[in-house]
Length: 237
Image (cartoon, rainbow, N blue to C red; front, side, top):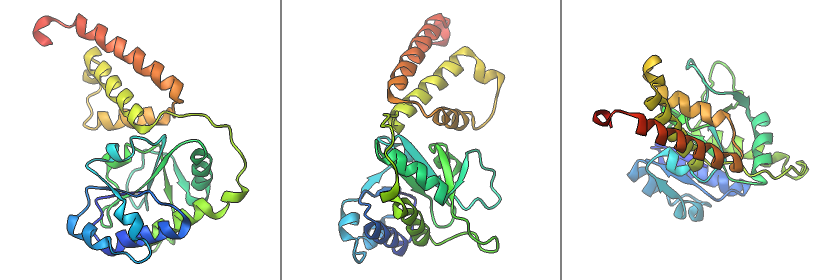
């Protein structure tokens, strides 16, 4: 569980309590509001989870060791650039991946949710099918619903082939190398868009690379970047 820029200590405590209820123990906090985080550490029934919670400066750092990153959204009127699944459908895919590697489930701030930059680190998104007149849930309640879906059919879930996928840290290195290659080749000059790096990050995550393929992709891109840099005129290096 990863909470991004959460400000309300009651919500942080409620998420930790829900994690304790459903048997989850690892909590990551990205850029928390310090007074709220300190107050939340006294959450009833979840003090151990909060005491061991890890603080991170960026979402990339928080999800670096995970092979699947799933964001949560109420959608509203925002334009979504990811595949969007209901909680019950998304939970099946998450359970399957958890058998072989780590998964991060991201929740944004109470007021704004996850930013476009936060979402660009996600492979896909899930939403809780709430009533259209009041689609946004309290953070603690939303976390509890998602965690319940994850364990609801856990015992009935069948065995899956244990393929090792590239984690978010490896995927991020591929993204940066690809961005360098596109910049050096002039591709980005042909398609000038303000969020080009976010688009490329989403594109790479949609590939869902196996770990063994990630090593090859990174090696190929490094060679391409090295060649392109050698071809640059000395004054532009």
